[in-house]
Length: 138
Picture 1: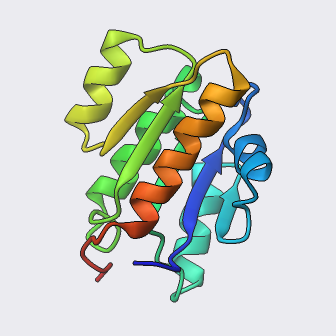
Picture 2: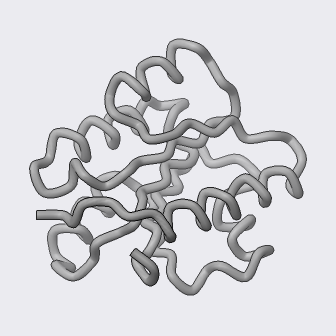
């Protein structure tokens, strides 16, 4: 698992602090594949056969429900469903949290207002998912 990238889908609704900013503060940007939309991420996953992320992180997508659509797309794909997905959102709206887990999210993180607290949460996500073993994509 070590060495597998994090696939970050950071949509237009990503509000500061963003995952990219937190990863930059932590010096953890080397093994991150960043996309700006679900479509771009799916295209890269299909075209780059060796791209097998440790985790997919969705940031800034819940306001438009694109995050839930991204989660549905990943979990309904035979080749992608084993990849854990972590959803980040500015609030822990109960309906969005419940729906995220019902769709197969591995985690849901409410973005705090403090950039240092958020950076620590991103560091823990990075550390946990890049060290964890998950089944390979098939």
